[in-house]
Image 1 (tube, rainbow, N blue to C red):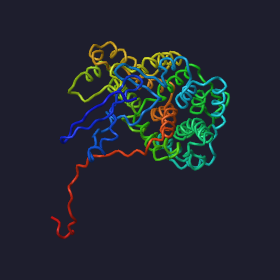
Image 2: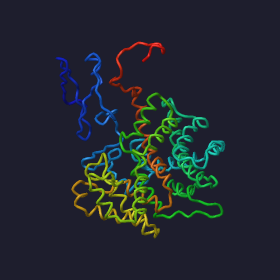
Image 3: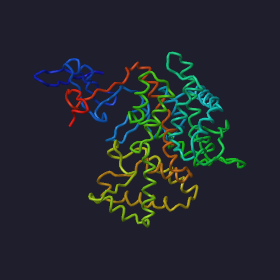
Image 4: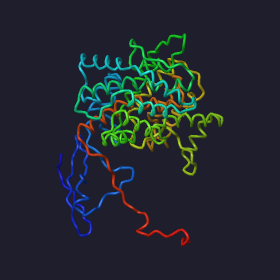
Length: 430
């Protein structure tokens, strides 16, 4: 809603720009007419840190206040009372479902949880050394060859079937990536298990050994996936929307999101936590030494999993998942020196005035790495788990972008290369 005006003076010209106010009071200057009204002037905003690329009704995030809400619902309530599949429905369709609608949604996801056998030919082509994220991105894109993708969203039945098919098959593809790396036979979901229970079963079930889902592990993973389900216009989500803005289908757009998430500056943060813990253990396990190194501004060492580029006060997701991490460690009784170092590091940082003053608290990546490690999930699968959690958000954002008829993404640039020059024959070049 436009409530105010902003004025820009440039080259003796004053331009009037509307100011919009969002639901939670955030304000944004609408500059879509800037270039046309000034004869070609654009803004420069590397990384789009100050640019709202869209108007969205899905997720509200306030980093200063430590607030995260999906469709208006506080993340604390959803993590405590809901399930991952219910949150997926909420994100994608905007409202919490009634029982009949939800039961159908779950049943339809299970009905689509079967992957064409020829997909196995593709995964067979990867060497065992292939990174699971590379496999997941490739298999997701390959779904376009086996299943009808949705490019025309006016057909609501096709759109719904594509959504439940994606939710049903994506965790299987992720589990297959892990089993390929382990040299294990590929497996499928069990209709008697929950969505999250099946993720655990498909990853860890071994031939001749029926897999029993640990309810504590299932609950912790369900909660962790909820916390990762959406996070506003981050790198991978923006990638999904940008690809989809060309009217590319859902599978192709999500495949791009997987690739964006793979980057170490985005989805690899919890992997970096474990690598840091390995570094501390290899150096004798002296946590105090590394706390001191983190305080030394001349030392390049940085504590991974502490603080957050968006949350300037605290990460609300970390408060929720810390309890689950404690429950998982207590239930499984894991004897792991890396997890012992993690707990010592957590306590040292939480009780240190240096970190308290700078609000460098453990974030969700710190605790998710601990949980994944305790569950026996290998480090190279951490980002795959992140992708499975983020899937409903990607679907919701893609769907919203298409339903809003947003134009194809086409950022501008400020050219700073050579001015016009002319070709010189090779023999005349100095």
